[in-house]
Image 1 (cartoon, rainbow, N blue to C red):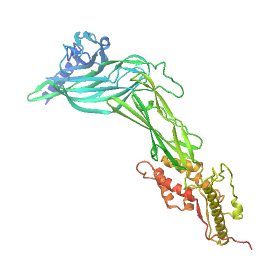
Image 2: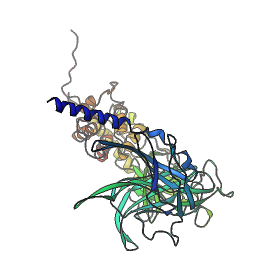
Image 3: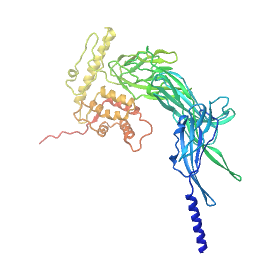
Image 4: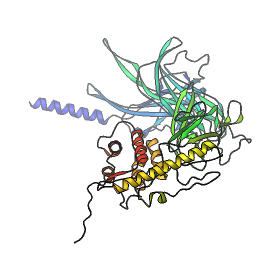
Length: 581
């Protein structure tokens, strides 16, 4: 037992001696490929035969001819027959700065030097280059001569012909430019020079903000690929990873300034494009090219601006001016973009709700957007010509009072006809432009109709009982027009804010009690269609389970138009007056 303990102590002592006797004696360096192509990386491996600090290696001398892509440091300890060895390994991924004969200088660790290494860097595609590459990048610009703020696209394709463990692609770089990826990566397989590759395609939109001559740095790939290990054990072979960095070609780009003959002012912004066009649609749909509508009817004019070679953020604001008597409520603009044949097509779709307060003809001014044609290098204008719309009277709405004739004003006092009755009568307007027998006949018929209405009202007043019904004529006012426009734009929040002002204006002639809540309003109106439509609005905005999609104001618009045309009918039955004793 004593002998066994003694042997164990001796072994531990020998182990301690062997460990303390280790010291750095040698530094070696090697590279994984020679020669190497200009856009490919090489891996420099530096090994120290002892455990040293990771920052013991000074890599500054490498920066003269190489770019240090990344560095990995690892340590390893091996023990064989009580013989302990330690090593520290640096793997440095280098990208050559230029072609030709380069030298990796001797590197120093704690006074020990590695040997210098000569490296031959050849141009990609030259006669001495490797015919097949495991990984390579191709990049193509849609144009290399553009105007400032003209959008161009960069298409990058990463070809991978080996097993990839991990990898990433950096962003392209260009001085004084905005760069944004378009869409998602597209992945497919392809064969190049008889070798199958996995191809990952990525597209960028680039907008230079300064004129001059520039060099575009295309993306760089950094990753690890699987390689066959040199170590073999019987029938088993082990896979190892190798760090790889691949860069794409540098692309020249010329950016021209804004031409001197392009007019830039408050109305015109700089818009360089291959094609720019304006298009319009009307709702309700006009017939035979005529834009004819009715008073109080919501009209929607949708204008679409389409541009090739411009981003969504570059599209200008669409402004539509309107004459007096026509209200305009612009909707939120919709922006879209798509990539077609390496060209970015952008669209701005702007809807305007128009509401006419009275009948007549309205002239909408033309809409002009200036732009620069980058194909013909000429100044152009996209134009929507002047539009004339005709608004006819609406039989469903009351006609305006106090209408004057062009030749004579026939104003009849309703109070004299009704002997100061409280029930008002809306009389249709009579417009006489030229005397004729038919017009005198129409006037006589109108007078007979008015007298008959007066007699009917007097009869109703004499036979009036405790059950009465007060009906208010419909009104067309700003609150009503704004509410209809909000329904047409499907703006739920604006609708709720306009309901009460519209109802209070509609019932202002009946009593002085202001409607302050929606609940009071719905009880007072007792209209099933309106109640259902309002509930849908509130459920959309505040419900625990919001309705799918966006709110549509068509049902509420129909209910509001019907109520506004009929007026508020408030039930006043069984009202009694208590006389004091």
